[in-house]
Length: 88
Image (cartoon, rainbow, N blue to C red):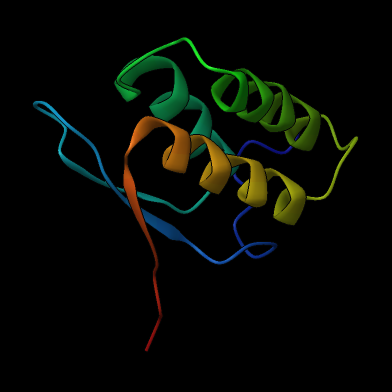
């Protein structure tokens, strides 16, 4: 399992609602934590697809970039602003 895979996809900044307002997803482990602990709703087709894609990416069944695309769709569905984080 590749919980800390980070070089395979560009980090994503998320503007969540509530106490954990701004998060940066750098690894699949970060993503799993945010999806389970900080996501505003555990309902929605794209959310469920993102959770499955995260598990699939961690287990090596899909590329982390495919997961990133699913995460962005889930963020859009939930009304969460998402930004690509550019490293200097």
